[in-house]
Amino acid sequence: MSRRSNKGATYLVLFLLLLASTSSLRILKGLRQALYFNSPFRFRRNMSTTSSNLYPTSVTSFGPLDDVVMGGSSSSSFDAKGGKWEGNIVTQNGGFAGIRSLNFNLDASAYKGFVLKVRGGGGQRFKFITRDSGDWNGVAWTWEFDTSSKPSATVVRLPFSHARPTKFAKTVPGAVLDKEKLTTIQFTLSKFAFDGDLNPKFNGDGPFSLNIDEVALYS
Image (tube, rainbow, N blue to C red):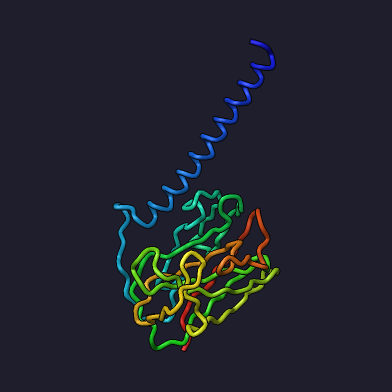
């Protein structure tokens, strides 16, 4: 066999090894997400709360919900003690990272909306999501909010009347939010806005971080 043939075979083997390692990494990330939300070893209480303060009082942590679910390579993690969500965005085959709480039961009919207190974010536009169904891929009631390029705190009010019903970032016509049956909260950073439009305040591939200080309801 010629040197050129040997070199080609070597490159092929290296490529296959790289492909296998990349696929294995995606599988591990997917398992990590699945285990957080579905592990039989996790004590999961279906939390009922009347507290207006969700995080960090009632909701104490978030699990990863990154684009590995659609074959992407983005990843993120959340530090429950410090409230820091950070990760790395890879736009190829994906382009989003997220964190989601375990399910709870919350009657928010006495309130007008959510109020968030966050720090950092690099000036990017994030999404905040709540749901009114136990269906994992049910309607995601979504708001967008802008962050600061400085480490100072940003306080954002998100009225229920401005929530946008979506599924996979596409608007769901005719949906009506049931404030009496909120079941989860979620943060997302995505290259997509809504209905195929791109997020105009998205920095693209690379690291990101957002400190979540508080998620509450306001009346």
